[in-house]
Length: 141
Image (cartoon, rainbow, N blue to C red; front, side, top):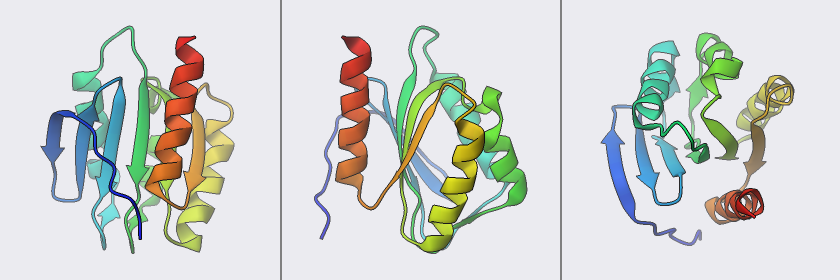
């Protein structure tokens, strides 16, 4: 059983396919709802929400709970892999639940590795958040 992670939520958005929460210290939590397919429209909407809330001198540390039985279309993957789609993000920690999700993250990381953003997959939220907090601490020192 996973530990519940508590953070102060500064702002939240509830979309039909996901929830986006802006936490303190430039942390962003995105929960993809179970049994959801993220298409290009959904990916663009999520990106626009991040962009609307972005502070020019800050980078996000993003925790994504990819949800059980979720998929992402090729168009949404291609959009998400573009450097300009990730220019507000320092690091992305993705909680995965299936081999298919791991394969998508591994494939996606090939494109991300050419960018400045860091990307890593995790089996649980606690490890993912700890990784983000360690990176954030290292960057602020």
